[in-house]
Image 1 (spheres, rainbow, N blue to C red):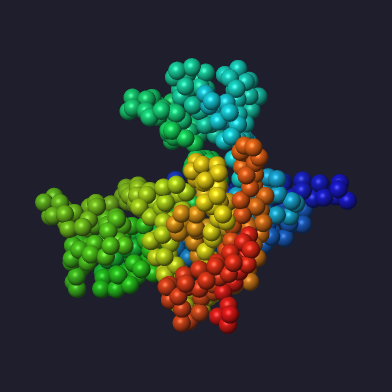
Image 2 (image 1 turned 180 degrees about the horizontal axis):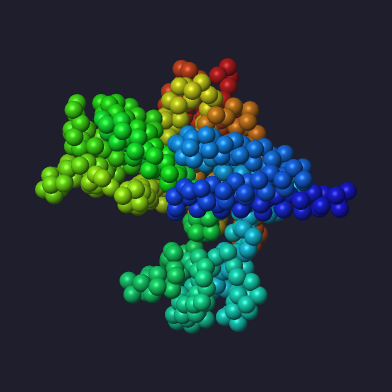
Length: 536
């Protein structure tokens, strides 16, 4: 029986490896443009996935491969062009495919959000104990890692096998030696290795410049937060699910709007077109674009006037606005940018120029928004934005006739953790639960730090029974984590309250109901999940 299970596991891993090829081809679109060669590469990788899945009896992978094949057929029927609907569907299928990998250390049959890296991450820190600690954290969250005590061990491992990424202390094996070692390693490599540098102390600009020149993609100082480190590694190794950019095009000319839409779709960017600018605010709330492309001269409303209206709404103050117009008078362009715009592009424009500008602006806007709406300790959404996301999700659920659940989570006896083990340990527990939730919930779920040791989770298109099952399993698994401490290791649990959206419930009502269910969970003995019941 054990041999049969091991063989089944081996077959599953073969299918997962092929799934990674599909993911990697799809993610290339975030840096390139759609072409016949690209479509053929995706089709070939997907056909191999389907054959492997059928051969090894992996039903879920087979169904996903068939769905991707159907999307590629839609593209062929659309004269080889991508559309926003196809991009969104493919992105969701790829996300589901990314969830099918087996998690390191999980019982057979459990599934992960991202297929595990085929190579480990190398951790080279001046403090070897710190490196071992980082390895344990990463491995618990399904990422294989290896720590090294000195440069001989590190270089020997490099000679045997290149890693998926390197986390390198700039002072590993001596002051500045980590930087110099990475420079030597990268020389002669056709495909440069993703490098994340670390320094225990604050660094100056010359040091960071040297790190960039050595191929560093990021630089951590002071401490290494496993959640942030994991997120960056997944992005740099292209195992993170990449959400396509969303662009709202406002132009009274249908022909010009359609042209802009096709150019951006060809780069894997989801678009929505408005020919009547007066409807812009309603569509902004529903579409939630990363960027707005705005015509300057429209009969019912000047682009500059609409930009002012958009900027009057606090939610859209930081959304980039790019004017796209035939206006070539520099003074008028500058005046327009003073009226709420961030950039001005003149028609006609090369598609590559438009795509590059949109990607750069949208990427920066996402980073800026993340800093504004996220909690600094955990990287989760902050209290205010969590409630905003709940309101938006509730509106969409009512409109589409879908279910929605809202949950509140509270770490049990957290004050005792701080009092007994100190606040650094308390922060560590909070960050671990945050990472645990991010790893085990869907990308479509919204997770926030509600305050202190309390978390909020918005679960769209989820029944209360399914929400209970998922969160109760997370509760059980979180209770198994052991935090190294003296005189004995620390374990923590949490309590959770869940409520389901009803037609009459607003955001305030949902939070009150979830809080009431959470109170019952705590009163009932803690370390449990309770559902809101209007009868009790």
